[in-house]
Amino acid sequence: MRILTIGTGILLTLLGVFCIANAGLAFLSMAFPIGIVLIIVGMAECFSYKKSLENEEEKHWLLIEGMTTFILGVVVLTGQLAADIAVPVVFGMWVMISGIRGLVLLSQVKFDRANKVRDYDYYWDLITNILNLVIGLYTFFNNVLYPLTVLAILGLCFIVQGVNVIKIGYDLTYIKPDILKTKDEKKKEAATAAAEAHKEARRAIRKARHAKRKAKEAEDAKDFEEMIKDTLKEDSKKDV
Image 1: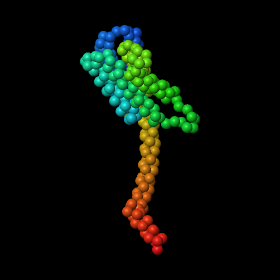
Image 2 (image 1 turned 135 degrees about the vertical axis):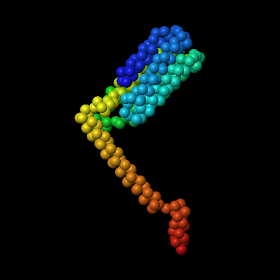
Image 3 (image 1 turned 60 degrees about the vertical axis):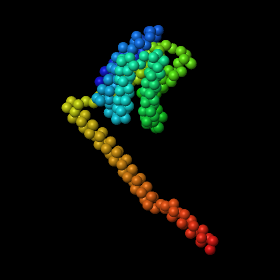
């Protein structure tokens, strides 16, 4: 699955290069290969979601992106996207949403405060997602900033998105079937699962203590009416 995803990313990148090289052509003349490639890439991302990724949150985002790419390919292939004015905007939204998705995931990456560094994967993802966001925004202001042809804009979108898919394939974790795992690998997985369960138990204990403390505070707290009565009693005592 990892090789398949990387291969589809390379295919999407090559499609982008081809679109830029033939930027003078009309979009409809390239609609068939574009639709086919998008469907293949979307299916590969959906299969990657099902087979390889371990991180649940990344799996859900990858499935959403794969389904979006697949649907976009079907729309292009069936000729429902024919107006040259709408094409750059639709594909711009596609890459812009992908960039936003990536930046949201990056915002949840833990920072190594001890060493004050992040690995190169973080910065690579940061750059590619920012490029996705910038190119997506550019499609909305194409005629105002620096006008490009429809295929030239799509070529930029495909290249950046293709690089993103290649990176997704590179990051995929292969899950070996249990029947093929060695005894040492099973022991290591069991130890990792036990350590994670211990962390979850400690977090649950902290949450339970916090909940008990809140319940105690709520029990000792006074209602608004009681506070008003106490205030009136104190004022009446002062008057006397």
